Length: 552
Picture 1 (cartoon, rainbow, N blue to C red):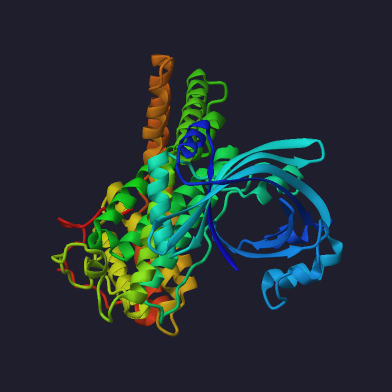
Picture 2 (picture 1 turned 180 degrees about the vertical axis):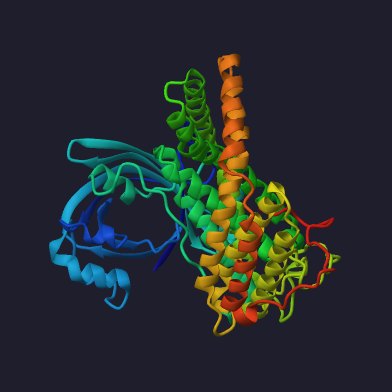
């Protein structure tokens, strides 16, 4: 009832490479008709129903997506002919089955697919069987057509860990690139049941239960961040909406924050590679986001204050050109093989955490389960790096509370020591990491702790500190845009002078910053209750000493 599948685009180079494989393959014509109610009830329920003809066989399939991009509910049964049959529906005690039974009499044809499938089954490792299927054909909705050229890898037998590890190696070898939209999603767009450009997606709440093993909790949080990033790849590729790059960067920052929250870099060097890849992709998204923020903020104000000014208009054109170039760089990055390797590599490691949490002997640590060095540094629990062996099978509650404790200590230290823009910027990074941690740990915090209020307090504090950071970075963003070829030097110099003047008068030092920080921390202690540590000693060392990984 569960289908674990990956899709990749099929350029001629990959098609030729697959044709050279020695494994025998089957070739068949596959025709499918997808159905829905006139008001789109199935699409709203993230459910697809199709009737498919393969050779002389008719099949009825119900699929449902519940947030996992790669694993879906699937119920497929043979039927007598092209008309759907109620007896072939999933049981009514499943959510997709209940929806299918309720709407059965209202289904109407919506679109069709017609393609040639070349399929082979490989067994690349003991216990693992994978079907590799090439589909070449078209989607049809009335007179509208769209080509189908894709490769599907479906796990027929084996663990998620083994499947994602093999798929990562296969994609690396073939330079394959993930194709995230399903045939159903593409057909719904062709039938005007979905927007042509998918909307950016915000993060979904994930809070592992207190009694979950740490390894399973870590896997759940990491899967959610990877899924959030994948959900925003299509919005980045298909639209200029500024929220797409922003949400992609947020997803990658959440992923990097989770790596630190669970001390994964210290436990296994492979997570360091994932972290570096996530940072590079986040930087590419950040360049687009910074230019969007500058255009809607500082540049808009300058255009209002100096209407028609030649230097400001030059700056405006330079920002547009720079953002267009940055957006193209981001699109090349997210659609390329490097991002595919990053996604599949991160998923393989995340699945490994969950599997090891169930397989490792009681008390076994992450370094024992994964062969990482055993001489990891041991730090006090109030050190935010918490570079300890990861107790995969320990209950999440104690682990999460210790991490939240440590991050609260770090926020307090940085706020106490902040004296300038750089100090408050570092405080903001710590506040953001703590907010992400509390959102992931809210199911494990002590009874009476108000995680929602704590998260809201931190979000407002982060926004307040972020306004100053946007102001501080405005000149760098403008200077980078104005450094592009063809920008007149005189206009660039005047534009930067205007920005310097605006920065000097727009936001003088706010004497309330420190007092606001202290008020927020008092409110945080009240919201978190037993999860909040006692006030730190003045002689506690800073957590950013030698050996501590940088904050995302």
